[in-house]
Length: 159
Image (cartoon, rainbow, N blue to C red; front, side, top):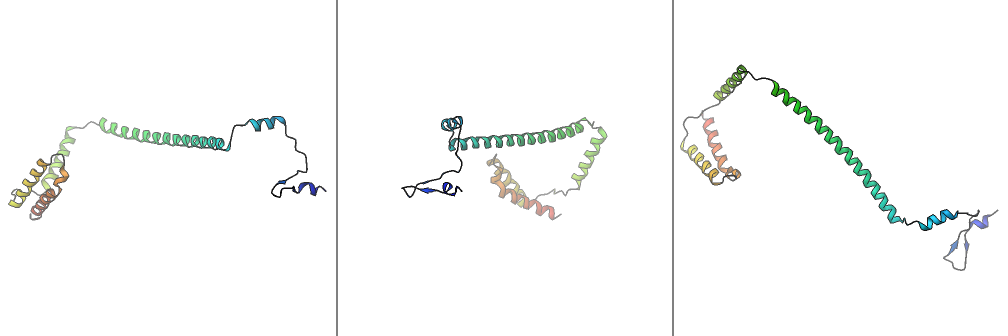
């Protein structure tokens, strides 16, 4: 029943096999011409695929960027609105006087040192000299500043 035709027949060359279909294939001349004239290779198809994927990624990134910009703009508008409300509130003299009195009370509550001992004065002079020498580079005077801070802490702790 046609089993012989669908099997591969062995020719003279053992490595070559010819497969014979059960039904005759009829391909149109247009299809064959299109296949022959196609300049698209697997490399070209991979390039097209890569371009398509890059286009999708670019669109997704553009959408994500637009979302971030929209979120940032909304947050900025909220902050601007809050700041403008603060600026619109008039500040009266009694309110300012009240805030000033509260700050004065906080300042008076802090411990004061009227007389500095020799070690504290020496540490202060060293810090001032170091900051003058290394103007614009205060991190170079960090150890001197720590020494001055420890002297001040010692004096405040002694009160």
